Length: 227
Image (cartoon, rainbow, N blue to C red; front, side, top):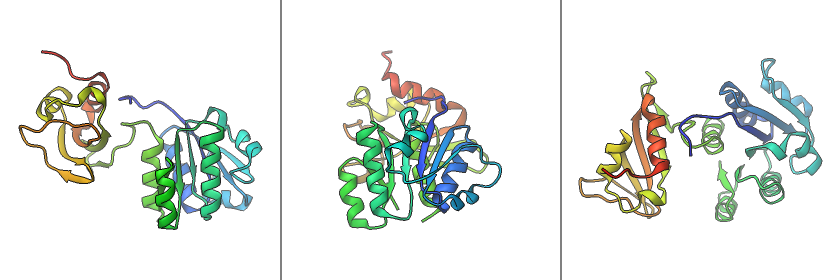
């Protein structure tokens, strides 16, 4: 996890509305992108300002993925219109090339649940899907769940690390200069009290000022400091 956002290389399969939106969003954030589609005409959705690589072919084909730079990729998104193609491509990226940040768009909710259990993050709409995929592809802290219109306040969701298990929430807030809006614990949301203690498996929803984000993530990574 990092406070500063480093550039990453992302390979996207599918240049429909979601894929094109995602590709442009990543490039706007100074990340490098290679996008794959079986139809070369689909790349027109990217517009003339897009500078990434456009590869015609199937996103589950090894040679096509190599041309897209899969070996140096930090993340892979399969967002074509076909569930089967997306799942095959996601598994090839994960199992053959060792990409850990893999997201697949699955239309069938039942199948999505199955693949979610297998470790493939699945999402299902255009702007919402692109935003959700974006947050899962970029390093933690790179893109908040919410930012207020002034750009001053952000809301991030962060899985708790072992170093903070057993520490009181009030102490975490003091050291990180953030506020825990709520905690997802065992499938339920809870509001922390003055006596609350962070537990293993907690997902913290943190509210912080934008200029404090790097500090908050640094504290989160390093663990609590002894007074």
